Amino acid sequence: QQQVKQSPQSLIVQKGGIPIINCAYENTAFDYFPWYQQFPGKGPALLIAIRPDVSEKKEGRFTISFNKSAKQFSLHIMDSQPGDSATYFCAASHSFGNEKLTFGTGTRLTIIP
Amino acid sequence: DVKVTQSSRYLVKRTGEKVFLECVQDMDHENMFWYRQDPGLGLRLIYFSYDVKMKEKGDIPEGYSVSREKKERFSLILESASTNQTSMYLCASRPDRGGKLFFGSGTQLSVL
Image 1 (tube, helix red, strand yellow):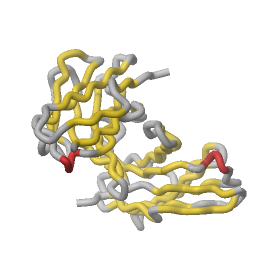
Image 2: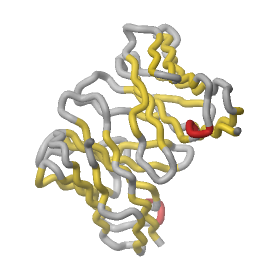
Image 3: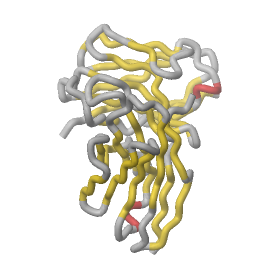
């Protein structure tokens, strides 16, 4: 049973564009929503995370938008660069503590010059 | 910086072999995890451990077991490798207080 649905599976955007990756969750007990970035040959690394008490969080060019009522959250990358080309995973968990993360299926993002 | 080290980058084994994947972290983290990564399926949790000698099943534990005898080391064991266990295996660790997962670079296992 997939608890976090991610789309699209792949995305190609021109440099300077704003790629948007969407995730939807089912479990209303989820209260921690991170995004991980993975470059080829490397393990995923935490990019940015949000908790449901806010609707938006920005870190540099990366923004998470969160819609609690729709049970959806998305990642936006402003002024995208070729170096942002990577696979992005959304995830969710019950709490900030010991609960395990449930990951989405991943989005392979390519930024073309 | 936290370092999570996986013993092998690439591994080729034969069907039926017993396979050990080793993971070591150097930041005294309580929690450790094993995931497998497959195209189109994302990261799926196999097993995790909250502390030494403790383990809990993840979403896809069938065909796997784990061992955590020391805090810094978490081993994934494939009792009898099968071709459907060909995958990228990722180890991760996290402080007990939760939050950020630190991943190793992965072991690409091929079972022939």
